[in-house]
Length: 311
Image (cartoon, helix red, strand yellow):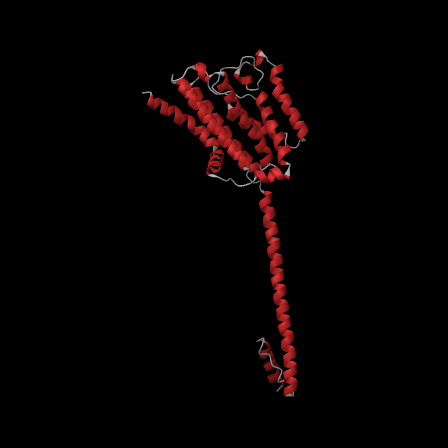
């Protein structure tokens, strides 16, 4: 009998809502009263357990969301205005090289191609790229240097610069590019790392010194290709593209200083990270994210087109 009661109690207890204490209560009235109380207690416990489960689930989701937000914010966001700026700059380079090809194939005179306004335009393009190197160094390494990404990008730049030197040496041995814009960008990317830990004021001071130094150092001893890239040559060897360390690394330092100065303001930082809107902005941003392949491919295509056209 006792075993039967235990079995009945155990079996009935497995099903919430069908729990019965008839075997334990001699009186049917007592059975009903006690059964109601027990069902009420179990129902209340069930509700409390369910609420606690929901609360714990929400807390867990909130914690997971917070962690994911921290992870997302840890990786630097793209600044659309930088991509747009790069896009405009590389379009300017294509236009300049189109003019250079027009001059090379005799469609315009050297007096037009190498006039003051065109020279200023070319230097503005070089300055834009060198300035953007500094801004990108600060943006990409806000928290710490992302070495893997940095080294991959540097390897691409060095390989591209070497390829341009080799190709231009084969085509134009007297004026080949021994230290052009890609060489300067690659070296500035490495040198800029040493300035990342410095205060903004010191970075600006170094930028001014770099920009001013060539006005005080004009030395014939630097007139060879081995030394001319430093920027102190009195008469540097002729090259189709020449962007020496002095003064152009000073432009990169100026970009680093400006990035520190302006992007430290939360309002500017938030606005700069707004997604690209409008077809034109999106197109320029798309181009700006592909400046290296565009730079490498556009001139062979333009030059080849002129060769075919002039036959």
